[in-house]
Image 1: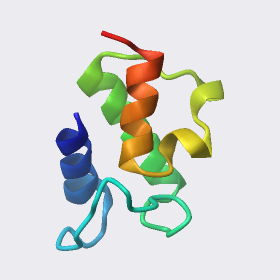
Image 2 (image 1 turned 60 degrees about the vertical axis):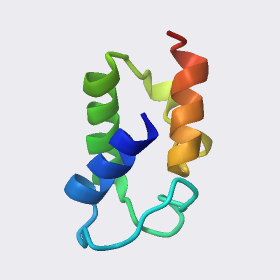
Image 3 (image 1 turned 90 degrees about the horizontal axis):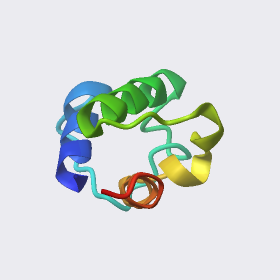
Image 4 (image 1 turned 180 degrees about the horizontal axis):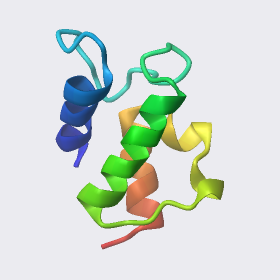
Amino acid sequence: MKNEILTYIKETILSDSSLELTPEDDLLNSGLIDSIGIVKLVAFLEKEFNVSIPPEEMLIENFVDVNAIVEFLKLSFPA
């Protein structure tokens, strides 16, 4: 899951795909991802992992970094 998210962000959202991105990198406060990027990321997560993320769950703490996204998905949508 973590690798799929990292790959998607690097290949689709980041303007410079040569940037090294780790699961701990702050996606929002660093400016790596803007509001359009978040919308794209949420659409990817919903499609890739067959989930529906309600607007009230689109909180900064759930999307601040890839680790937070993975944790959010695991807690909110247990397999």
